[in-house]
Structure formats: structure tokens, C-alpha cells
Image (cartoon, rainbow, N blue to C red; front, side):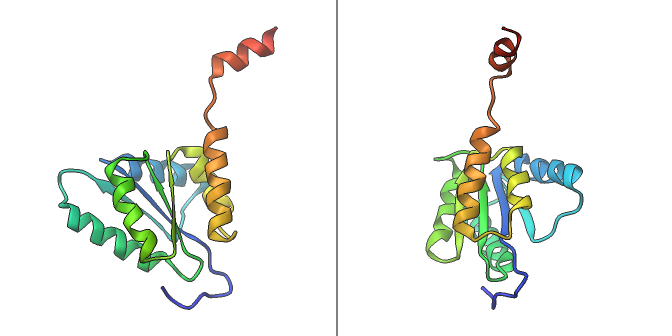
Length: 142
């Protein structure tokens, strides 16, 4: 972790099985434009667990400019989350599971907030982004 600069924002790492994380980040950049202080990490058979843990450590260290790092993972209990949780004791990070596009967009739009506050906001955005469209549309037409 480096000395916090006055304009430090929370770094963002998306960690998921196979290429899901990189696809989410590419999609976010398609919507928002080029993004900085972020990365994606794929967890799959192509990488040894220790190599993935090292990539997570390196990314957390690189992206933490003093404001911490938000790690968004695909599902609680999965390998991407379990590997990311190991960073809680060694880095200024927070892990939020169940990553979806509304969460990521909220994370980038509010990343100047303190890490814990951002994590809560992102979790709420993810929940609000889950909608059973047929139910809402049916209610609207009644």
C-alpha cells in the first residue's frame, strides 16, 4: 500500500470463473468508456492456485493508492471468492460477492467514497439490479 494521494480512489478487481470477469470489465468499459485503477482476474484450470493468489496480491498492491481495493467476485463459496477472502488480512480490501453489471457501474461511479461505504452501496446496487421483469411488467399493466 502506498501513501494516499488527495485524489485517491478505491481500486477495483473483478474476480470470477473463466473469462466472466474480463467480459464484465470489457462490458463496463463499453458503457462508461476507458477505466483506470482496475483489473480482472480469471480463475480457471489454466492457472495454479498459488499463481492466482499471487496475481490477486500483486493486483491489490498495485491498485491500492491508499483508499483500498474493492474486490467483486462471482459467487460466495466459490474459488474466486475464497481466494480473494485471503487478502482481507493482508491488504486494505473488501470483498463483495454476486457481481453483476449494476454493481460494477455503481462501483466506478462512486469509487471516491470510503471503501466500506462503497462496498455497502455496491452490494445494494447489485440487489436492486436483480429484477423479475415479467412481474413488474404485469403489475404495470394492471
